[in-house]
Image 1 (cartoon, rainbow, N blue to C red):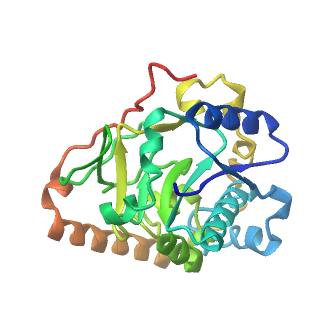
Image 2 (image 1 turned 180 degrees about the vertical axis):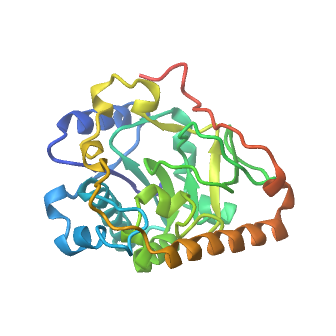
Image 3 (image 1 turned 90 degrees about the horizontal axis):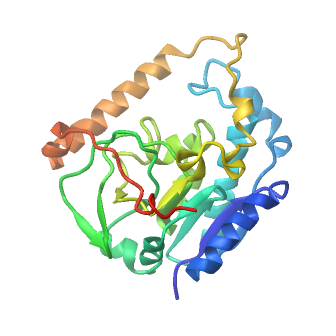
Amino acid sequence: MPIPVYYINLASRPDRRAFMERQFEHLGIAAERIEAMRMDEVPRALVAWHTTTHSLWRLAEGDLACGLSHQRSWERLLESGAPAALVLEDDVQLAAPVRDFLDPELPARLRADLLKLETFHSPVKLGSASQRVGTTELRELCSSQMGGAAYILTREAARHSLASPLRNQMGIDRFLFGRGGYHLLRSRVLQAIPSPCIQIDKLDAADRVGESNIAVTRAPSAGRPARDLTAVLGLHLDHMARLARLAGRDLPALRGRRVIIPFVGASEAR
């Protein structure tokens, strides 16, 4: 039996639900819808915390709701008893190779905690060791690549993520795949090359399915206090320590050039 596939969707976006379900039908994937958290459901205390000096990333209701929605999918994974799950946002274009990643034994075989199946088209550093799943290459993700629209996480990764106080302190993509987050250069995070998934706005900025409900909440507020410098220093020191550990296990990755991850279905998308 394949691992569960969860897609996060707001009830107010039936267009995105239809978009995802068309893809699932075409690819023969059984997926479960996770009701996304609305912005008005975000705890007021959490919103208020992000206006203080303690918050380094100053999230508004939209990004907080997004992160809490992902946490719902992690909780669903733990309830399911499955060894891992594919988590998708509802604006992601899927290509056929994504089906190769639904094998329940795959994460253990790859010794992976997280598999990033999406590209953000930003330059990234990758590990020197290579593995393959079908036609897709996998290497360790060694620098930030934003985007949390398509990833596989194991039960253990879900459990550790839900226990981490960082989960509500930063955006979901930073928490999973970015500098300062819980997992990058700490857990074993593998990047798919080329990626079988990409957010629609990276392919067609004019596509209405790609229009975000939360982008309007990201405008900076002039009234917020300065960030806690001690916390900023701690962030940099932690990242330096992670880089030092990377140098010890894979120095070529640290010295290597950055590359842009292509999307496998660019020529046939939509």
